[in-house]
Image 1 (tube, rainbow, N blue to C red):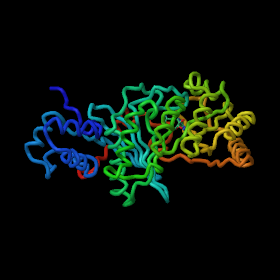
Image 2 (cartoon, rainbow, N blue to C red; image 1 turned 45 degrees about the vertical axis):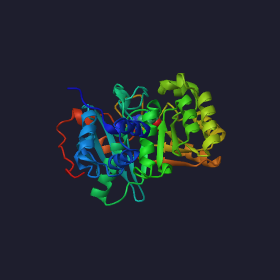
Image 3 (tube, rainbow, N blue to C red; image 1 turned 180 degrees about the vertical axis):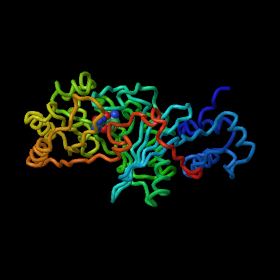
Image 4 (spheres, rainbow, N blue to C red; image 1 turned 60 degrees about the vertical axis):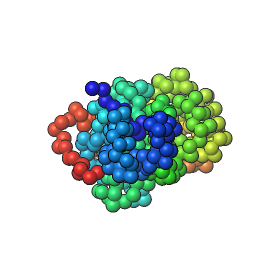
Length: 360
Ligand code: SAH
């Protein structure tokens, strides 16, 4: 028998239409939305203010398929990595990153990735499919519950920095953000959500037009066309000139500074001319720079630059009034750091499985 679609995959409009098609009043759709997105109900029989006949009727057409956390790995630094099993059996990863002031959920938007960035472990996984809005939402919900359960602290931030390219799954990502930020959903501020992109020019402009109020990060890694094209093939079709144009448009529309994510590698982008090119680019776009620690993925061509070269970046950027910080990696010991999400959990069955309690 075919698997029934998840009721949560319907947009709000479609849900209202569906309820109307059953001859029911709009307030029923409102009640259902509240069960689905505020009370996070996963079973129609618990929707106690709906008539039983209506619950049964809906369950003929739809089901609710929450994601399942198959495995939890905890790092010595407090980071938690989840292997998240989707209803069709595929697995993505999500990460809870605690610091003194924040708890951040790093979530995935696609199963695998199509982008082929040479330094990224996720790139080695084929892109299988886009995640549905509710699959994205469920990752946030799970981490929110884990933050409360394990750390007794609230989830404060969300970054789309897990597997996949959020701007290549645009409408589902936006629908998830809508549910996460809506007062009839999790009610989080969009300012606490950062969408990270490899630099899909056309979609950056679309996001600027739609302006859901989120922050934008761009994985830059080089401000020189030839270098960037070599390490990030997307640059061959979305080059720095058009990216600059899109990011200027982004700032014009949103007045929100862009964060550039940047790893410095030995003999790739650690020369003075690499630094100068970055400074020049940052002067054209209101931005700040996060210098990310490199997490080796077993390719000898990529090696973290000497601290002296990273300091040269910091000094030059500061000299030109550009805010730059070094971002230390978290969760390295469990392969949960930037660029390390590659479903290693699946191929390493010797890692003991710790199940999340039923109540989560
Ligand atoms: N596709 C989006 C979302 C992924 S975010 C994007 O590219 O922005 C993951 C971040 O980790 C990106 O900034 C990526 O460039 C960076 N990254 C990838 N591999 C890495 C590695 N081995 N070490 C450190 N950062 C890495």
